[in-house]
Image (cartoon, one colour):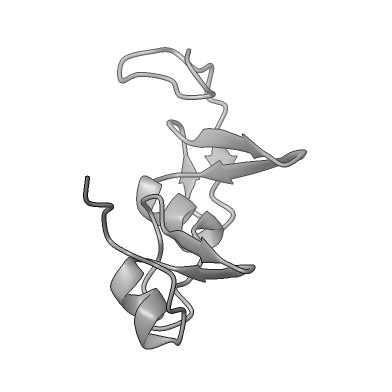
Length: 94
C-alpha cells in the first residue's frame, strides 16, 4: 500500500473509508497528509475540490504551480496581471 492507496485486488479486510467531500464509502479511498491534517478522499476530483486554492481572478481551481502575488493566489500570470499585479511575467527572456 502506498500513501494509503490499496491497489485493485488487494484484500483490505472489508475496511472502507468515507470521502470527506462526497461521503462515498470506498475500499480504495486514499489519505492526503498536509499541514498537520489528514484528509480522506475517494478520487482526485474530490481531493482537488477540497484542497486546491481558487484563483482570485477567474475562480478556477489551481492544480498547478499558480502565482502567489503578495499573499493572493492566481492560476496564471495573465490572471494576476488582470487583477492589477504589474510585476508578473509569463517567462523571463535571456
